[in-house]
Amino acid sequence: MSVSTDLTRGGIRRAMLPQGEGFLGQAAGYAVVSGLALAADTGTFLMLTQSGFWPVMASIIGYTLGLGVHYSLSVRFVFDADRTDKSSATLLGEFAASGLAGLLITIAVVAALTDGLALPALLAKTVAVAVSFLLVFQVRRRFVFAPRRAG
Image: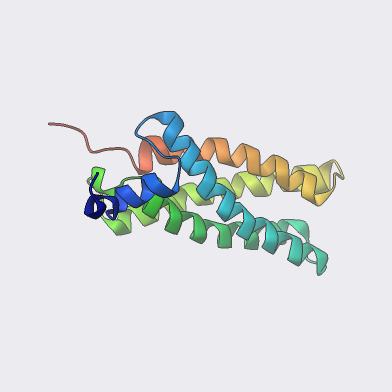
């Protein structure tokens, strides 16, 4: 690759994240971006729960902040939005909808584990993050950022 090619969005993406065309490369890039979004989410969650917020409400606020971080980084570094036939507005809407599904999963898991089983909030949040990560990645990869169909 030439220097100018390295400065394209794809070149920067490949240089900064372990992203590739295949499932594993994309999953690795998504994991890095998710980790950054998770830091924003969990940092907010911890700050709010330590301030006396109900863990479920803290989870909603943290997840929403993390969703904004995640979209910004995913579009730039993980998924190739140019390979879809969708507008930016459609992608954002679908990303947010899949994030809402993840939020609902997170809320349900945190509520069940903290209110139902009296587990510590951070443990509940950790379980919720794992479940949400697996499900939402597949939705985003297969539907939101699916390449346009040939023909």
